[in-house]
Amino acid sequence: MIQREPHFTHFALAELHPFAAQFPLQDVKGKKGIRITYRHFVQDQPTERRLVILVNGRAENLLKWTELAYDFYQQGYDVLVFDHRGQGYSQRLLKDHDKGYIDEFRFYADDIALLLEKITSLYHYQSQHILAHSLGALISTYYLANYDHQVKSAVFSAPFYGIPLQHSLRDELIINLMMLFGQGSRYVFGKGKYKPADLDKNDLSCCRTRMKWMNRINRRHPHIHLGGPTFRWVHLCFNAIKKLPTILPRIEIPVLILQSEREKIVDNQNLQKLTDLLPQGQLVQIEHSKHEILFERDPIRDLALAKIQQFFTENNAK
Image 1 (tube, one colour):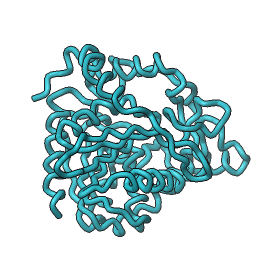
Image 2 (cartoon, rainbow, N blue to C red):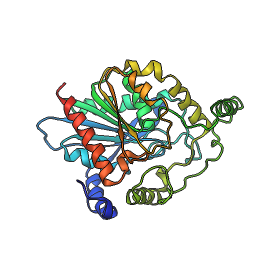
Image 3 (tube, one colour):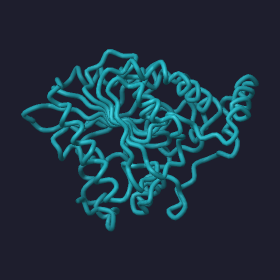
């Protein structure tokens, strides 16, 4: 059992910060020339070179994902972590950098393809695996379905396969009308500029210390945080989710989906049906977890990581 939670800030400053500092931030040109920032954690002369590709969620950044990179690096993997276009260290698409905006949804997957093309030209990997969360899982779904790749297995944590709408027909109509009237760059109603997570009342994680660290990152690096989503972002993601029944059957590799028991950020109503469309898909519920399974309290997170590492190990030799 990993005991980090009680003293997480000390662990982050003493271990994670110097670990990340060994590997510089780098850039690659994504689709349409947009700058995509990444960090590549590379093992020193491993007997077998294996890669874990971490694909984060909406409004996240690669600094937050350093703990996961650290864990897989300790397991002998090289680790690639990056920020999607429009968030984190990567290039923003609007003058107002707080707005969660995307030009085209398919460009998310195009960026992954271009980044992996660069990484795999520098290093030969015996195996590659994807670990993706929320929006990152939706993006990775499209990447794995539409691109030639060498990924052997994928784990999707709390995948963004459904939008929780109180009045789906009305809300979809409003989104379409706002797009029709050219208001795609406006925040969706009720959302706005970045706000730190409430440590006591949030639907992300039960782990106060990890949430506190996330707030600290965003406070100390204000240029990488992100506010609420715009109408265009929601519209394009909504369309991508609608097409999942035709996309998922095209993913031939083993996929493990982790569902959080206390989920309120994404809609899991159709998650089992969607998992069943995967040729080699399996769904596992993580008990007591909120949306951010990978940033939960130590016992919950440890259980999830053990399942992920076992899944990757089983698929390394295939």
